[in-house]
View 1 (spheres, rainbow, N blue to C red):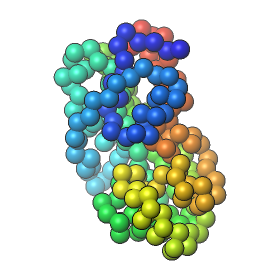
View 2 (view 1 turned 30 degrees about the horizontal axis):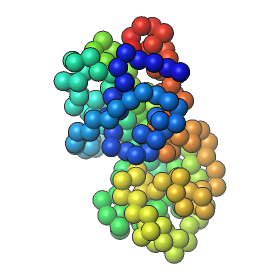
View 3 (view 1 turned 90 degrees about the vertical axis):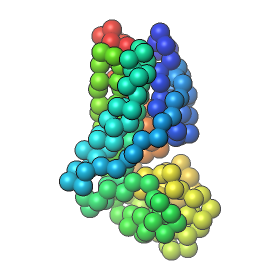
Amino acid sequence: MMNFEKPLLLASASPRRKELMQRVGLPFKTVIKQVDESFPTDLRGAAVATYIAKKKAAAYEEEVMNGENVITADTIVVVDDMVLGKPANRSEAIGMLQTLSGRTHQVITAVCIRSMNHNICFETKTAVQFRQLEEQEILYYVDQYKPFDKAGGYGIQEWIGHVGIVSIDGSYDNVVGLPVEALWRQLKELKKDGIL
């Protein structure tokens, strides 16, 4: 439905982002580079996700100069002004879920679309509420699903999302890892303006 001269370049190793792009029929290929995802400690909330998404986009300078249209994204979880990225190990994942248990948190994804003549970044926020999780539920989930590649230590599409999440306010796809509706809208605008 939306065609481009070249497939979009999705700069992500996330299988969930790939699946979301496929579901809406966006033509894309993936090129993965390792990017340091650290950020200045004075950044808060959405600024963290945007900083990392821009850092990822900067790593694809050569591809952009070769006429590729690059999409990068970064998802974080924020609770009490504290940023939760991907847990480094089992105990971090357990600790993150204990922190989120019985509370509402924000999932923020920043997306950058970069081409030779354009660079746009935007953020999407979704509020997610967990019920009070039992310790056994947290341990079962972490041990069975090993959510070490997921911001906040959980995947909404997995077991914990089905049994533990009371409500979400905003984009579900954003919590999965890519706010597809907002991305689609931005790509349509860029195509209409002749930028992509």
